[in-house]
Each structure stands twice: as C-alpha cells, then as structure tokens.
Image (cartoon, rainbow over all chains, first blue to last red; front, side):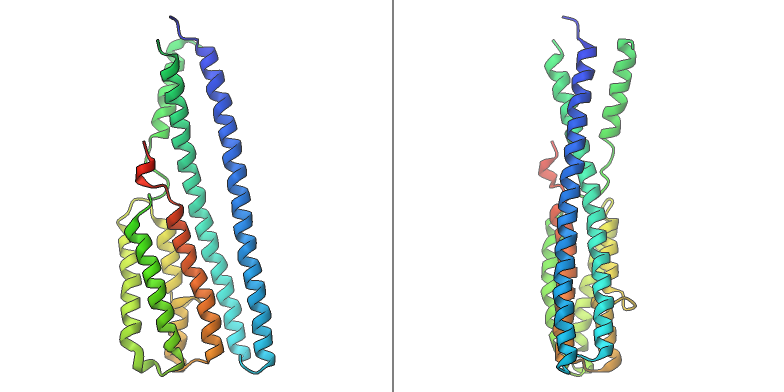
Length: 109
Length: 143
C-alpha cells in the first residue's frame, strides 16, 4: 500500500499549526494573569506602606527601599516567565514529535 | 515534492525536535530546597529587629544554602533562568534577600514594620523560583 505523502504532510501541518496556536494563546493568557496578580499585590502593599508612613511606623528611606524591592520582585517574575516560555517551547517540541511519530505509525502499512 | 525529499525533511524535523531541551527538567531536590530555604530566610529576617552581630551564624547558614543552590544549578543542563533568580535574590547590591541582609548589617537593627514589609516581598521572590521549578517538565512526562 503506497503512503499518501501529500495527505500525510497536510495532516501534520494542520495538527502542528493548531498546536502552535493553542500553545501560544494559553501561555500568553497565563503570563498576563500572573503578571497582573503580582502587580495587584504590590499595589496593595504600596497602600499599606503609605499608611505606615502616615502612622510613623515606616521611614521615608525604608519606603523608598521597599519600592526598589518591588521593582526587583518584578524582575524575578520576569525571569520566571522567561523560564516558563522555554518550558512551553520544550512541551511544544515534545508534542510535535509525538504528532509526527503517531501520524507516521498510522500510515505505514 | 519527491518522496525521498519529503523523507529527508521529516528526518530533519525529527532531529531538530529531539535536540536537547531549552531548560532543565523538574528536580525534586531543587524544589524541596527552595521551599526549605524560604522558611529559613524569612525566620532569619524576623531577627533583624535585633542586633546583627547576635545572628551572624544564622545569616551565614542561609547564605551558604543559597550559594549551594546556585552551584547545584550550574551543574544542571540549561538551568540559567533559575540560577539568575537565585543570584538576584542573594545579591547584596540588589533589594531582595541579599540586599536586606546587607542593610541589616549596615544599620545593625531594622524597624519592625520594615521587616514585615520586606518579608512579604521576599517571600513572593522565593515563590517565583518555586513556581518556575514546579512548572518544569517532569522526567516521567518525556516518552
């Protein structure tokens, strides 16, 4: 039985394109939600620090240091997101490998 | 396109896909350590309302633990992101754990409200390392 390569490549292209689109979309949503969550938490902290200054519990110097800490925390989040993006690339590659090998296995007589 | 050419293309695609991963796989030891060191670090930070000299040993112990994790990461394949997180966290010139310890050393004692504020931020910083590690592909998931 001859292998229908035209159909095989068409099927592979279609499956991989769908996988790529879903992978990018899912990751982008997760990254945005994560970033917004941290920003909201820092916003709450900022309000607390302002209140602490007003109550005399926090010095201006310590407040400024806290702001810089918040900025460094966002860098940690960014490093995490870069790492997670690489993980998604690896997951995508693994999935493409599985798609190719399974598709070929199904068409080889 | 000829069959032979298509086979060659498929072969190259499979070869590309099977290249080494972009990032290290999940490591249970690394994950357990980050959660453990987080607790130790936050505990040490609580003592910053006291004189630094009284807590030098505990501070040193946490510093050694973090430096061990950086060294451990250097021997894992493609662990750059995690190493950079640990380095940022422990850097005395930055404003996370290493910066906090440096500030405590310089000022000898820190105010209670500031310590609590910093513990919140630094706990979230440790969480970023833990979340990256827990997001990594498990070796058992690779078939």
